[in-house]
Image (cartoon, rainbow, N blue to C red):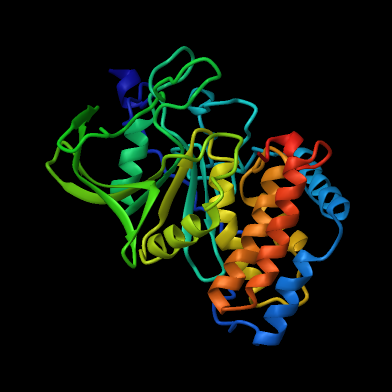
Length: 354
């Protein structure tokens, strides 16, 4: 009784975890109009200058910046680091400032205020990893996400055979239902990805219905780039496919969830095309290098090889040319140079660009 009166024995309710705010690492610049056409030509054309060796050397230097990056995961309390069991690969550190906190992912906002969630693929309980599919679905519901972009096949080739991905959170077949914790995910329909009557066969487009235990439901559009393999760049028509897909997903006013297996490489290429383009279209004093360095601050270990960085720069030229109807020859010549380098033994082809 004395102990109770003196409150020496206290049984308090467990405090609810409060996530820290996600820090926006860029200044607001959406009020700045794009450059004039002549300056857009200068900015775009400058990316294409240089010999094969000059460009290769540039991409190697940028890759070194990625590899040598200081990857600090500390942040002041009440921030709580993500459990190591929620990392697909422990060596891929997580920037705590713009971390999604419940998932291994980061928020990346473009200059025009398109918000991307760059994340790894959800996981199931395997070895030392825990199931993160519930966290993945909970975030979709909480943030009212309308679009998820998955980059890669559901059965990647491991060098010997095609193996199912760990962490599948939907059924590929129409009518399929998957139960994950307190959620059910139903594949309502699958339809072709059409742009002006043209079928882009590399993209599978599905409508998924997510329902929680309170019977609250949300339908999302799920785009899957089925031919984009890990450590590789998309097929030859990849720029056009990504450009049209980007135009489509940007119609959403909600955050856009983008993931591949580890949330780097393919994920950062897709997001990077829009992020870098949106900055270069207003900064005539910036180079590709300047915008690239801002991009890699947002998610550690962003790129895997020099070939990916080269593909990204050529892709930014493609986006600029398409968006502002600039001279097509700028892209054609730069892309030709890049492809020649990929076919050479000394170029980025040796680093996974093929």
